[in-house]
Length: 248
Image (tube, rainbow, N blue to C red; front, side, top):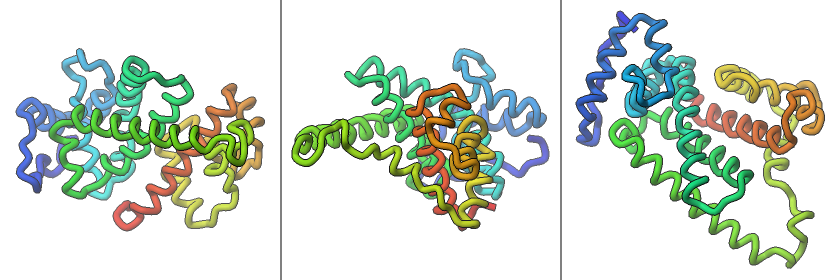
């Protein structure tokens, strides 16, 4: 990353980055491009070269501030892999949830985190200061909302239709095959940056006009996995719409 302008812009809410985070960000700033991205991709926190999550959020926001959304999303993808495992372990150990519920909660949480990591708004700066604290707070909030919604569904079950006959919200969100030219262009950028297999499932469904069952067979996964990928694609498309004013 040599030759880039100075990092460590002042935080607007009188927050103070940890000294080790500051040192790491400055070290990464002086690296050659290949070494910088090698370190971004590291996932073992015991590796001394592995960036702190606070450092990665700082780089995400820095790239967004430069208008370099492609590099920002590359860092987001690396951070997402680390966070997904942390969330999965936490839900498995702490909460009495089925595996499919864990997958849904993890997907919902990660998609919500995209907004906060990519945002340049001051309220989201705290991710650069206390990442794990922010993540735990978000996780607890999502679990509480899930339990509340699940209890409401249980109360209503049997009133009109059985759980087996109820509409699957994932199918509803991903059944919209008609997308206009503008949204298609935005989707191309967002999904290309996120990479395989989500982008392939999206294009097979919307442009190849395959059913979810057919896509599952092509990709060797379950239909539920395909629905999750399509839902994530729709969420990313919505993020792109909301960010269109400052993503170049």
